[in-house]
Length: 270
Picture (cartoon, rainbow, N blue to C red):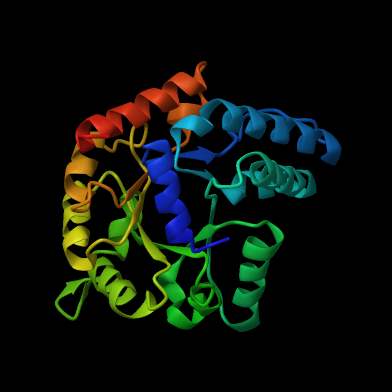
């Protein structure tokens, strides 16, 4: 299957896009309570999003919470969505937004479920427990480890800006990932779109490492500020994630195309 970073770069080149669409069905959408009904409805929703937006994206990103909340039917629908992507769009990278981490065999079980059972190319991870909790993921050199670093939520400052050795904790984490945890070259960082100044600092700390950037649009992130702060010297290195901004539109293809084009206008030459 090749390394995730190579697959992502190839898809960015093929699509000419840095846009990632989140496959996050809204909690207020009503589905039948029967597992089979939930499975069919959720799958059809995901299929529609994929079929309409795939020409304009470099990746898809399902958030597991919205499927887990619907029980066995929700998980079954996610399995069907992943099978559909593998069959119809085999070169499309898929990021599982799971934010997992634990110790020992628990973390190994998480990695097995997310990578081997569901088939994600990369997953989001919570670094709070330290490197050993993420090691079962980091050891999968062909898969991507997308590590939370500087997030968009207001409460992030409760911990992420605490001083550690003369620098904010999030900056210490960024350097730790770049200098030690990324030995197999399979790490990315999550950097919230609402903090463009910190995005610029992170780019200086970690070089060309790719950032997954949620929060553009409804959450308040300004696209132009994000791109100016976070693009690497190759005018790439960002995966701009949008969920509601695309999937709640009456014209999902148009919304995805417009956002991808807006990104490229700032990038220039794409």
